[in-house]
Amino acid sequence: MLSETKFLSLYQRQQESRLSVKEFCANEGVAYSTFYYWYKKTKHWRGNQEFIPLVVKPSPGVPAQDYVNAPPGDHATGNTGEGMLLELEYPNGTRLRIKQDMDLVHLRTLVCLLD
Image (spheres, rainbow, N blue to C red):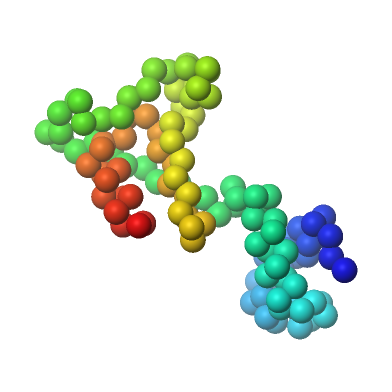
């Protein structure tokens, strides 16, 4: 039976092998359903590997009050100026990480696209 540690090692080998999950499971003698059970169960360990960075530049002509601003170095809230202001995670696992000075028009568009 797999443990979390053994699965994470197995998952890393599958990623490095460039084989499909079905092919890898067949080669390793692991049931496809078992692999996906542990894949879902260990999602919190692998979260950062699936992050896709997004850079949005402000639109010219958008008034300053339409921007999200947070004071730099606000350590009480965990925001360090370069840090994250907001993170949205959708049921499909997609994460939207918002930093300061995000144009709200773009933010609304992104939220609607991922809805």
